[in-house]
Image 1 (cartoon, rainbow, N blue to C red):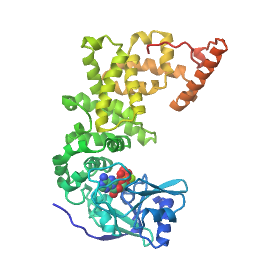
Image 2 (image 1 turned 180 degrees about the vertical axis):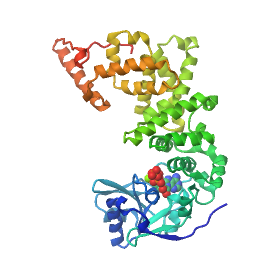
Image 3 (image 1 turned 60 degrees about the horizontal axis):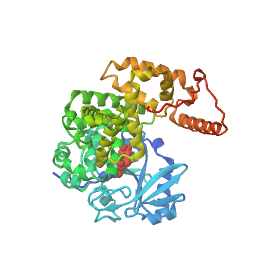
Image 4 (image 1 turned 90 degrees about the vertical axis):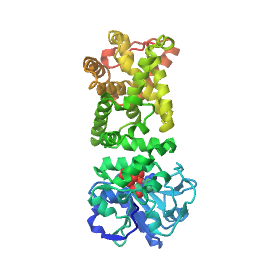
Length: 451
Ligand code: ATP
Ligand code: MG
């Protein structure tokens, strides 16, 4: 059943005005002064209504992009077919969109499903009915301090519901990404998805396969890296949607081990986010695809033509196969894929007793830029395999004994390694051979191939 359009106005005083970005307010003032309508819209207003600090603010106006650009200093138009204006005010980026009507919702040139019929509009209600969920369609006008709700959003917010705007089947077939956004907001806000929205998701979920894989990559990252990863995962698992986001999982998706391992890793990721730490996609994908990659790696070990390969090469090959297949769904950038494979290869190296008993190899491993991510990954695996505990203690101690505090970030280590390599090239060309003492926090120059 479709819900119609209504118009409720709420006093702006219910928002904590101090949490509103001065930059967004200034852009709105500029547009208002030139005679245009302009509002704060979307997730920013929703979060303010929930007393949360919004992570960004979007502005919508009836001024055309070229006009916005002319009126606002430090602005540029982005997107080719569907233009938006990025305005930078006092170091803050504000995205300004023009009211539109039509079926798709595109934030740049990432195409959704239907791409025709999108035109600018002068009518705010055209813009409102294109929004995905009722709670994402509030418009706040600072000029008269009024919040406009055309979609029954305030009622859904109070009843803690995620409800699609308009006819669910139509809206999901227009843009299937909305289906996984429903789970993202459900997890992020702790709201339930309304039955009409949820049953339409079940009917339309296979359409997800048609979404542009770059766009899916972005949504996947937002889903799992921004503080509500575990809740998102568990909701998606509950509704059997997770297998639409991951490649070739087969029966593995139903295994308790998979569920526990991913839940536990995502719990750690959420905790990092809560501490203000940045979560990286390479770690997320290394986790999500590890059970499948490991299974493939073990399988390859039983096939003669692969079993003769060096273990790290076999792992790299299994990893490459899985990542290429996953990229059909979510396009993983090559530099991220390379890191993921290195993290997986590190699992072979770190659990190799021969490496742990060879001082020279230990030296080489511990200075690798991917070592720390590999070790953190191993730490997540301990919940599945207690035997790893001793190995983790060994490598953790080794790390703290070898790497000085100042080099314990990847950036610092990369530049130090660069400088070291340069220095070593220089000294080689001078024919000078220097040796360094490992215990002083500096590594031996001998490089061992093979790890
Ligand atoms: P978050 O705080 O997590 O970013 P958000 O609501 O701001 O949440 P965005 O992805 O930043 O989400 O999108 C901004 C707004 O644009 C949404 O609130 C919604 O109104 C609209 N929107 C975004 N994507 C779609 C879509 N696929 N279909 C319809 N409306 C959309
Ligand atoms: Mg947003």
